[in-house]
Amino acid sequence: MATQTAEQVSAPISDLSALPARVAALRLKILEAAETGDIERLRTPVEWNEVPPLFERGLKKGPGFDPLDALKARSFDGKGAEMLAILKAVMEAPYVRIKRGPFQSFGWPAFAFAPPTAPNEATRLLMLKCLRFADLGALPPPYHRVRIGADGTWHTFLPET
Image (cartoon, rainbow, N blue to C red; front, side, top):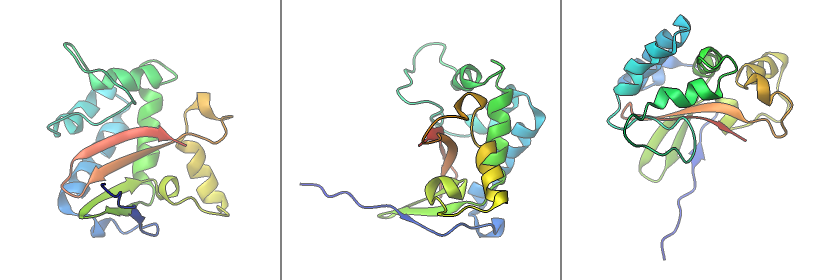
């Protein structure tokens, strides 16, 4: 019988120099794309992966599959601008180092992986920036979060509760 290894999540980290070079490069490319407000600019960091990152659960891949369509569909404006604003807020936040067995990844924003018991005002404002407009009243709030492998592979950008 296989045993599951629990994830070990670090305390929040703000030091970007502590990121592996490939993770830091991908983060920068994602931020550059998000700052433009043009969802198509996100295509470059998406295509750095051998397999596209997951932007929604249960996504069926097939002919004509475009991972950016999931972000456009989830965005209030239908063009992806809301999701880019959320992605920018997520990637500018402190992060955590996540270890599961021999594997290591990095997760943004830190509060989505290690929720604070009493967030200060700055953290509460950041938490709001990591939610879709349509989800502002949801309980628990489905904060968006990103996970990038230590090798620089972008795994996910999903809302999590």
